[in-house]
Length: 373
Ligand SMILES: [Zn+2]
Ligand SMILES: [Zn+2]
Image (cartoon, rainbow, N blue to C red; front, side, top):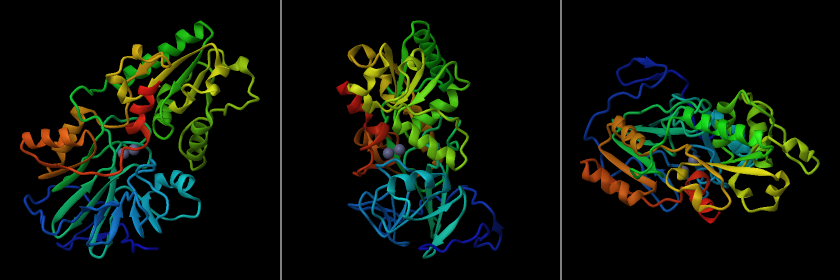
């Protein structure tokens, strides 16, 4: 293993031992920008003192992965470290035999004297903010995050730091999420209406995160539910390692089409405008994404209903998450990076836009799929 894990007990400088690092108050103005604790390289967010990369988009020797979405967890690294709930999906996507070490939330480990711990990001199952501490300086790389509790991923926890690396996928004031329960009611009502008219309800969203969130929150189901292969595989993978999800049957070419009448069909957005979708006729289509906040369904031929459901922070939540970190410096990695960084600067929070390869997959990239439909 590439990292020597310190066991749960970590002896602090004061000699006290603590079980879980309480992400408490940090000293202000200790940022050493001549030798930054984390820096942005052409391949990753890199910690020179520990010689380790966070979410590299090019193969490296040692990578800490915030979460299993494919723009953050790239193939080809020698060694990986991630939260234990990311393991099953990382192995599915990157290979069963990858060298992977897992940790719990709050478990401290050190590399070359740099302290690391992972904290819930609330984005998808296993998603983590990476806390990095060295010489009284704390940085947090948050990956993707949301503040709404989705009932499946561990809820977001604010972590105090001197420097915070944030996404800004929905970093414009037009993005404000309705309550999750309201959206779930809307979906249930749409499904009910379709059942009454004998239509299948094809509910789309990305497979890792959005689908499990829907499954958790739409239960108990009011009718039959079936899954596209992409949804089915992830679901079964998570169920196999003990996550509390119901079995949802896979749609195959042999599935009796009569069963689709009035059923809920869970599928990724990539099925739009494909022949796969025809077997459900008559049907209605619904799409779950943060992008639905601004794009009216009327402009799209292939989507009947848009549901505003996102696994990223909205405008207000970005602001409160950033404020709670107490960070003196904020780096904005993906989404509306330039406008969001400028807005933070105007508010007196020193911020900079950073070019990364994040946001190329999953919900951050869905805007294109939806726009084309
Ligand atoms: Zn993500
Ligand atoms: Zn992302």
